[in-house]
Amino acid sequence: MSISAVWVLLGLLFCAQSRCSECPGGCECFAVTRTVKCVSTDLLMVPQIIPGYAKTVIITENTIHRIGPDSFKELENVSKVILSNNRMTQMASHSFSALINLHFLDLSGNQLSVIHPEALSIPGSPLQELNLSRSLYNFTALTDLTTALRWGDLRGLLCLDLSGNHLALLPPGIFSDLLSLQQLFLSNNSLVAVYSGTFSGMNNLELLDLSHNAFRTFGTDDLKELEKLGSIRILLGKNPYSCSCEIQNFVAWLNNSRAQIDVDSVRCISPKGLTNSQLRGLGLRAIGCIVPTQTEISDLSLQTSYVFLGLVLGFVGMVFLFVLYLNRKGMKRWIIEMRDACHDVMEGYHYRYEIDSDPRLGHISAHNGISRARQHVEISLSQEPPDDTCIVAEDAQVNPLKSTSEARNVL
Ligand SMILES: *[C@@H]1O[C@H](CO)[C@@H](O)[C@H](O)[C@H]1NC(C)=O
Ligand SMILES: *[C@@H]1O[C@H](CO)[C@@H](O)[C@H](O)[C@H]1NC(C)=O
Ligand SMILES: *[C@@H]1O[C@H](CO)[C@@H](O)[C@H](O)[C@H]1NC(C)=O
Ligand SMILES: *[C@@H]1O[C@H](CO)[C@@H](O)[C@H](O)[C@H]1NC(C)=O
Ligand SMILES: *[C@@H]1O[C@H](CO)[C@@H](O)[C@H](O)[C@H]1NC(C)=O
Image (cartoon, rainbow, N blue to C red; front, side, top):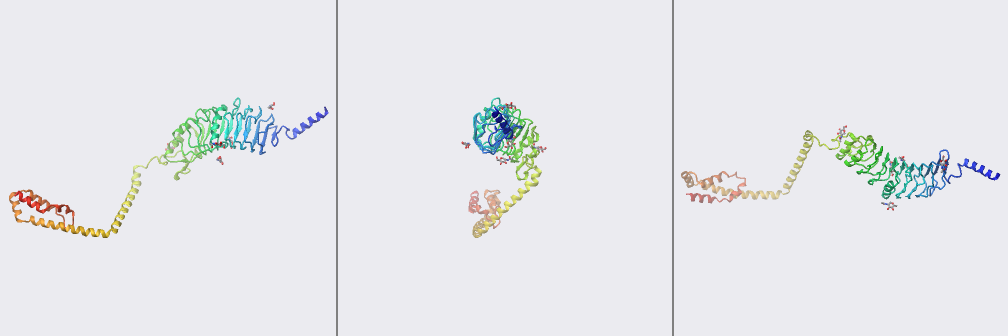
């Protein structure tokens, strides 16, 4: 009996000094703060013996690849589990079902690629805060998670952190079963749009963080989705906004929205002239939706277009002259040929003129008044151009004799 009393005494002493032998190897257990801490101890799995008094379990920076239904024994007092940075790849069915009072679960900094649809199911839906920041390995994990969020019956969840997961799109209805959600962190992803229905049913949302994503603007559909959320706080800063006319609706929304937005961080990244300008309050003219007014056009655009036209015409003229210069020999020959042709034609006219001054013809016209022949001759004469032009070339086909014969017929 005395021996066993000594053992009990020794046991109590040992417990007091080393915070009880119940504490798993390599971990630290704090009875006063009811915390168990296993940090960087090369654990390959969740320790099996966790003291029953523990409220907070911190198992970080180990190499726990998988958790499952056998990972946690029933521990009614545990409300907070931190499993960040464990290179965890798999979460099996009912991984946390034994922790019926688990309010806070931090799985950030892992590489989850397989998430069982019932991985997050816990009887009574105690979970209030779930941190999955930088924890999804690829798109498969996201679709898995979408199912797990639906099947997990997380109707008590208040806060969800999905930041830093390279998310390019949010599967439709991913949040539709999180009816109590108040805070949703989606920052530091690659989102470019918010599809319609993404946030439907989230009537208790108070904070939506969409900062540090890839939004270049918010289109009409995206804005409708955001507007549905009412007067909540929305973080939209640090996105690569492109401030062209397409951003008009977004600016108008920022100008008037009921939501509380981090407008000071919502700034243009392009074009150059607007880099770092705050989006809210940007005028339609600044973003290029209004072309300058009439007077400005005549003052500026028209002047520049005249200058441009002048330059173009000048250039065309130069080219023309240059071509002429290159062809100067051919031109010379052509001019000479034309002159000779003109010469021949002019001789023909001289002949016709002589006929006209024939005294017999003058006699006819004097006697018979108007005659077609005379008219014709008169027209031909009046059309006679100066000596050096050659337009007359066509007229050269008129046979001077024809008019004389016509005149004779009339006679
Ligand atoms: C949980 O804590 C209470 C009070 O601190 C304690 O009575 C109970 O035994 C603990 N539960 C377990 C499973 O140890
Ligand atoms: C989630 O965890 C990351 C670090 O792992 C931390 O920076 C972040 O603040 C946590 N999210 C919330 C909502 O507390
Ligand atoms: C995601 O990673 C897992 C494990 O490496 C792989 O089986 C799966 O095919 C990957 N999914 C995609 C979409 O790449
Ligand atoms: C965004 O995530 C990357 C990796 O996922 C990280 O390196 C970076 O620090 C994060 N940035 C912010 C602002 O959280
Ligand atoms: C936003 O408001 C400013 C004045 O506060 C106004 O000049 C601008 O035109 C508005 N922008 C849009 C797109 O409605």
